[in-house]
Length: 256
Image 1 (spheres, one colour):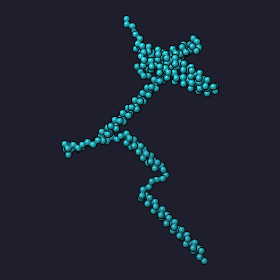
Image 2 (cartoon, rainbow, N blue to C red):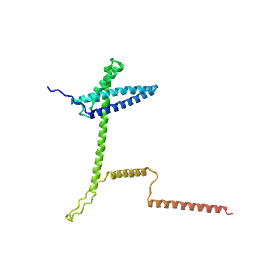
Image 3 (tube, one colour):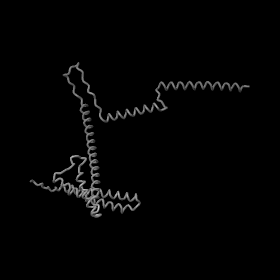
């Protein structure tokens, strides 16, 4: 019966694991200190001692958790060629994270509180670590999709610009074509910037037309303007005539 030989981890794997342990421990210690200071402010207690204690406890648990996962669970799974649920990006590292959370939570709880309740605390922390790993997986998947969408959009725009540049090259005349044969017309393809300018210009024009319809000030052409001036001139002439008549009546009344 063939026995399974455990393969030792490589130097690159150990270096990557060390970076993961240090970065993860420092990050969670900082988050723990921030959470502790926030709790202190809310409860109106000294925030700095509570932040220090919370940061220390979170950092110790994070260091134990990442050490278990990166130095024990992951190398063991890799040597045994055992990668459960890692085929899908949604469930990547869920099993190793839950096992590391259970081990680290039980160990830290045992040293902090004794054997009483250590298993329950380990199970609770394992569940919490699994939930956090699921959130990290979804965030990483969203980041990858965003980058892929951005690259695909840039590629499509580059293809459109390249197609427009190719079609804009003048084709030399062909003297073998019959004079009576019609020349097929190739519809020009507008670029992305031209389409954007056209849509923006159409929107601005529509807004101006709508504003002109609801505005009390109306735009007049030359004929309407001349007609308005003529009407205004007639009114002024009529008022002058009425004023002259009033003056004549006053002169008559002043005569002895």
